Image (cartoon, rainbow, N blue to C red):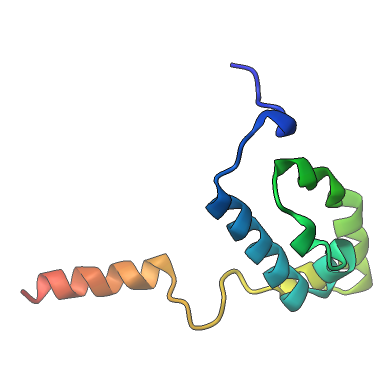
Length: 101
């Protein structure tokens, strides 16, 4: 099956909102992505807007890592927002509550 072209994909509005939210989060928490996204998160309204976002190339990641050892500035963004439980932690609590009943 051929891959869908970006201009033929019709994202669900919630997906576009989630993407914008993720871009805003990256800008806020990572200097690496803040430099690349540069306030363009709000401009993403559909799949047609995606080409306006810069790609991250492996050479950029390596250069950033060399300039900011050991992991580079992109590693400064947490994997999930603070205060939000991980799936693993939620599963443990769910399993514990099931076991106690």
